[in-house]
Amino acid sequence: MTIIVLTLMITAAAAFFYKIHLQIRILNPGKKGSLVDFAFRLPTILDWLPMRIKYKPPEEIELRKRANKALAIFYICIICILLLSTFMG
Image 1 (tube, rainbow, N blue to C red):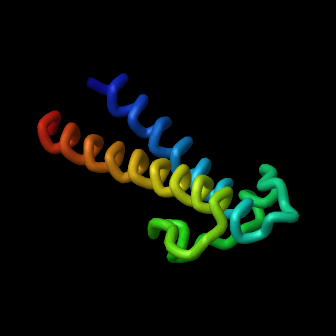
Image 2: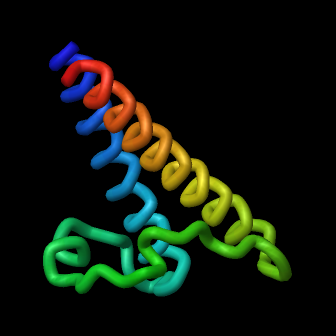
Image 3: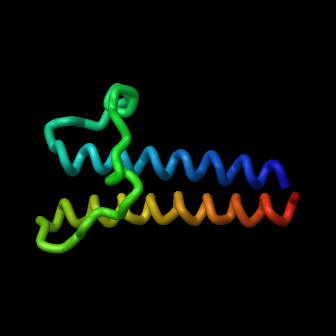
């Protein structure tokens, strides 16, 4: 059971960082979204919310959809971890 929780935690972290990476690329197209951007960036409420899709160029819509999917994976993993922790304890 511990391995499953650890795998879910790693998956959740990867999905969240991928969402932030895409968000940096969308909001600042000149930046590549490197590791330095993650390290020196202050977290905001926008990191935890889905990105709006309406009235955007088609390339940006695709990136926003991927960011929203990554955020959904993050939240699903967190919910699964919480459910597993209540049943394990």
